[in-house]
Length: 594
Image 1: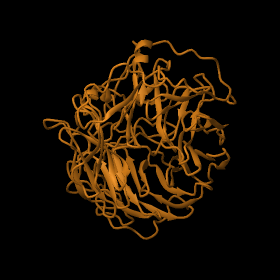
Image 2 (image 1 turned 45 degrees about the vertical axis):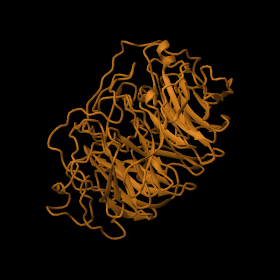
Image 3 (image 1 turned 120 degrees about the vertical axis):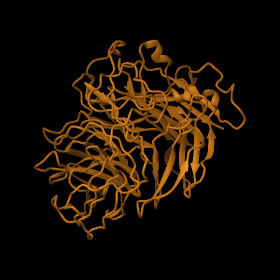
Image 4 (image 1 turned 90 degrees about the vertical axis):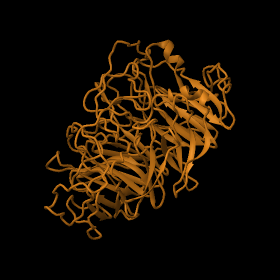
């Protein structure tokens, strides 16, 4: 990454560019992103070139002004892991093999990267879309045409915010509401391979540009996903539909994880016209599909934009992030817990889970040189337990882990990763070996006014180690990659573990003290779920998906992977097609088990 900062000026003067440390990975160069105004989260940065590092001021308790000194004292200078790449890279795909623009994609614009089945174009507003892959050296704009437009789904008029969703319990027979596959998908299964439990096809009439898929989430014996104007639950065992909750307008935001009791709060637009905002919240019990409380987000002034929001859940608190404003509500009953804090620093996004982490932007006199800060908040009151400020110019990009806290930062084309201690003080800056490139998969959850901090795959962490997958390498006879383990106390690599021959792997999370991996499919090799010991070595396969269905598995667009109860689930992250017939033949979710 880059040189971690300290309060001690580096040689050559404070802020002087540093020579890349030995063993810096080689990042791509690409066009610098446009500098947004106050509070605007930006697209994830490319792995950075040489620069003074981002690690700045830590302030316990309530944050003072933007230029407070770091406490406890200054930290020693540490080398960062990413050196400058002396020249542009050619296009290189991210996770997933085939590269294609999804049918009916909006015309993109601005810097981005080539799209693929596993990496869809990111929709930015209504007029532009771009794909950004961190690592792998691509920063290439994609384009899509309007030649294959299909009629927009019939609308019933502008829905009022007070409209309640309705529940369709489903017929339970799987005819288009569950399995939807006629072929015997297990006919070619070999010894030792998992069974295909079910395969689901799309049964929703979508607008011409298709729809993003939210989830899936598992609650007990139910797997749930949301798309367009409904949220549906299916049996994990056979894929049959258990319930469907019809929404009055488009589903527009959802947290990466529900609460521990299976409750979730989603964002729904407050109307069906183009002017509708993502301004309504709806609580849902994922186990039953029953709708709970519903309310409109409290708007904090004239300049509170609700066109894009991001949601995160920590305990019984759901946070609503967007540029310059924020709110938090109790998941169980919808009571507002806290809102926009006072002061010049305002949260724009949150990461949830076992801790509530907030990323804030502080008002400065130079929008081209932003000041961000990261805080742990009390989820019941919103009061900060500590505040840490990276050096000016560095922006909070993603939170790869909340406990331990591992944070991605960016500055123009530069990228850095830091770890903080439980009290918010600096722990280490991640330092990788020369030549390593990385590609965390954070999906398409990015918008101009609302940015999700969490939900990335390709990364995992335990108490003392951070695990990250390298970008796939196609320089040999087969596409492959490895997992690198970093010591969180030093930031240095501990070991590297190669993926199975001719395969790529992606960390999903920790499971029973081991790293849980998705072994990605190829055209002649099924994917699967594996574990990797915290000491390294070879991955151990838990669930080998059949090779006979590898083409189906790899065909899921921007695939999302879940593993729960000994079963694995592959779901599309977006559903789109050229016409109605193709739309209803689109495979949307698949399950494997023993």
